[in-house]
Length: 417
Image 1 (tube, rainbow, N blue to C red):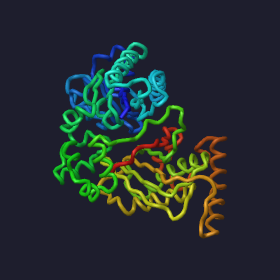
Image 2: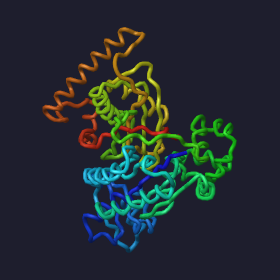
Image 3: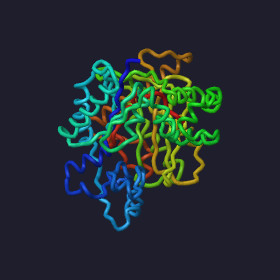
Image 4: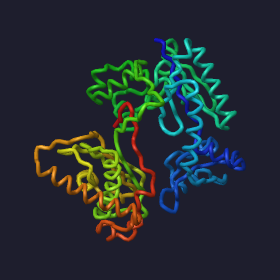
């Protein structure tokens, strides 16, 4: 095989960084939360003490405090810039061991050490050395999985925390991996888990022994991918750290300052988000053929729907109108809306072709209009010009997509539904 891959996962990263900078909270229950005043007041991360009380990522702040009872829960506002800085410092250490370091979020990374290790014992020694260095040089603990493929390396880093190394080999993976719940496998989400449960697939071993034809029937190609993962047949390479990240999608989302109670309010927010997405697409020269709408209600239940466009576009009116159509088709107003996200995929660059020549003219005219609006906002501020539909809703007029982090989604294996 000749492959030795590590997956490194910083333990309780956000909360650990906050404790590192504020030793007084180190032995207390700590939750890193969003901005409560802007209704982003949910738990983004927690330490092990808070976790022992049942605090979960995604809990509202009041739910988290209630779970801790008489024990004080220290809530710290997230500082993304600081976390990014620490993440870069840690990954600089990884790059001293390999040119193949692939980030998987801010606190996780795969490291291919095949060039400097020839046995699993040597790979484990490298992992242990990395753990010691991260503690000594950064002050954080890290759990590392060692395997011959990325999926099992990721499983290993989750199996023993904090500050541990777990080795999964071709000889022991059946004993170590197959007994784990199927949802522990990378890319098995809640919806996929429910489908597996209906087929009495409860463990990774159950999945490994399931007929691939059945998996393709219920999940399509994703089912075959997951079957390969369960059987240790993941052959994906670890990307080079100096390689350009291929942009797969553009997206932006927001938690609204008030719950949305009508279609007009939702439409206003969708158009605002679509403007920011289209602006970034044009800046990088991309067009999209698919749009996705993500909606979360005030009970924190969320769903995502997507649709393909008849032609490539990078103007907000096309993106927004498609997303609003998805909303009208799929949302039943069982609850008020709390958060909305807009995303575009199936990207293309360069010259575009269209069967309807007048469509090209319309597209160019809309591009010029939106570019003019962006120029005005860059010179005089975002609020210098707004759509009339957002001004009709006073509570929503304070929204500014440029004040929130914009996300460019990185390459992944796939997105499991």
